[in-house]
Length: 384
Image 1 (spheres, one colour):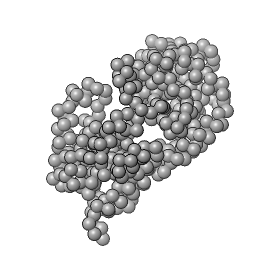
Image 2 (cartoon, helix red, strand yellow):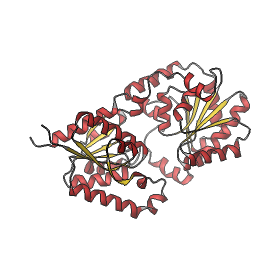
Image 3 (tube, rainbow, N blue to C red):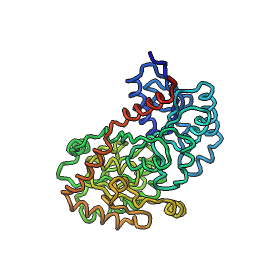
Image 4 (cartoon, rainbow, N blue to C red):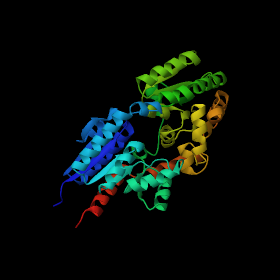
């Protein structure tokens, strides 16, 4: 007979809610006597999570909003800390949301509570000095990608590569026929999916060049079709305004969400740097990756970044599989040229083989692996 378990968790955004709910489901399949508490979102609540705050109160973007809301965020941090110290859980799992969770994990570990951090901060890419703080804060790091483990092993931090949930969700083979039928495209249509980003700032900096590139592509190939997924109603309004200003004569289908269908339907994808590049890889779509920031921010970030690549497919492969057009190189003309080149290469067998190899590497049943690693840590810390 095993004792009941209590697991503290904090997820601060939708992606973390998704990851955490998967881990909760897997732990519950192994242990019926477990209680989860802390801060979580709707998917976690469906799994029986006891959330002390609405997760939306933790959602902040950019540089100014976290500063403006610092008193509220500090209040939530200290309240969660106080409640967890008053009734200590068997383990605390911070899911992504790095600044908040690493602060909290440091406080809890110092008090003797075992801590897990799920989703590695990008210490391999920039600000590697953060590894010292992670050493003080984290007992076990769970990573989505295999290349992330080495820096933790070098610093004697227990680490486990668990794979990426999206690689589990998306099948190895992808047939665009269903996605095209859903959008009213035929198999003979030439389609470009445009993903300018899920944040307002991303669309602000990249959207104009993306839609001007669409104009150039359309002037070369008038039969081209375009589809754009929008992350939420605010981003849809922003995208429609840009299209009205820049590409009013183009027939562009703007979707409410459904990035997967948009990507699946496309011959080539124009995508902002981020997780969307991984989704395009998993759906086996050729892509052109671009990213722009404010000039001052880019000047700072470009000096801090230590990796030779920005696009996840290139980082995972250790070589350039997809073109990267960054900042001043991301002109409409350069983007259009790269897109048209890929449209002219319909059979990209070697690229698809590389994409499939990466997909298989990341397909590890991430939720179950993460759950198993968390339970192992609890057992290792439990006195016999």
